[in-house]
Image 1: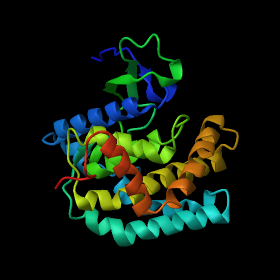
Image 2: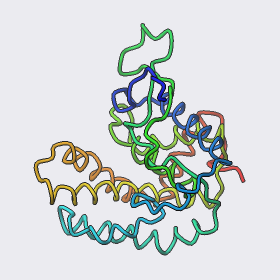
Image 3: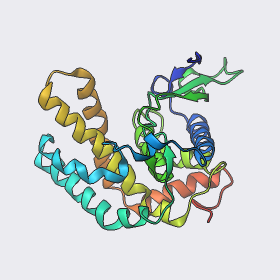
Image 4: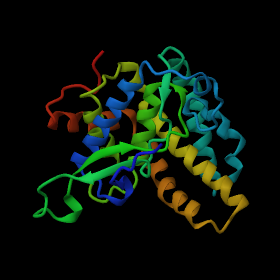
Length: 253
């Protein structure tokens, strides 16, 4: 049986700080709830979109629009192999949602906002849908997936700031370690690269697919934007946002 949930997908609502905070908080709660959940099939499944297995993208980079884009993905994967994969191997693995994108999060406007302009109205999270991509991996990869997708369509703030508000909400439910924060930027880039590369590959089979073309148009510039922002600069932006919420650190061991 399936229960109807009244709400709108996140991409149909404005990405304002309070909404992003609420999304981060809800995902933190979801991960805590999944800590002790286990399933033999999900645990053993070999899932192509597993962020921890992103070097598989190297088989598809030929589909990138330009040599510059292809070289960028190669550099990102190299950094993942050298700096991220060894860290992931030391972190606990649990079952994660695996596809926390802008179409899998259901939102509903909060109460008493009739006097607030439509583009500034905050939303509460009603639920998360589509657990088809569920697999065993590191919780930090789910957070990276969430930030990557919620950094698109940021019309009222810099996309790089979306992660700060999401992390602020997330930290109210689940803490992050220094190691997790240290690899987060690269994981975000890996997820965006995954979307761009696989979308490009799909277009080699179906060049007129407008839905996939929209993905490339939205995510390709975002990939360059994240990669051209150093880890130190990104963390500084997020730290500034956390202070607005009365939080002092990106992590709490």
